[in-house]
Image (tube, rainbow, N blue to C red; front, side):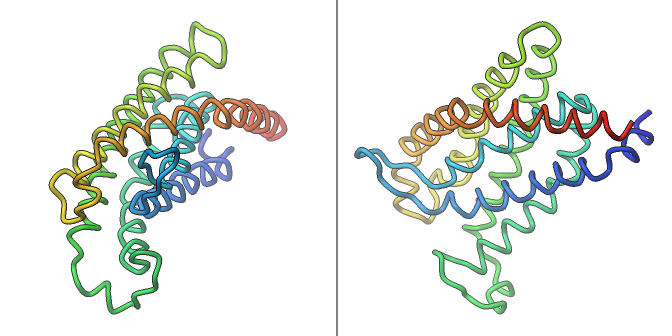
Length: 213
């Protein structure tokens, strides 16, 4: 069954996989750029990463949990490699040159490692919760619950692994506060943008799949 689904919906699957990679890479770069809002510290990554849950939940809804897990495992390594390369080449927003890739950057690698662990655990938890709730409740319950729990686990693991006693004094000092604020912004973004986009894109994908049959 899996080969036939993969052949029929190859373009849709590629778009979902590409979306995963794009969001992970951009978020890993933006999380290194802190800013203050209403006297609270957060990072720009808080505004991008919630959309990875949009992609995962759409994958589960349309193709099932098994295929969602396969996509996560496939895109994980390319996304993290791209994250490391981009973060090294554009350190603090400035182009450092290709030669910078020759020197191992422990700070960037630690962020990539944190992303690896947080993404894997957070997304697998998201899949478990979403797949369970989508069978019995209204369409919005599963993505809401999975986003709340998945983002909490992802945020805690990422910031603890990436910035606890790290070489970045600011992030090492404020990572707990920033993690809490990031989580708050992620939940806000999920409520304002995630659910409406989820419904719109889901309807679009379903119409496309109907046309291919």
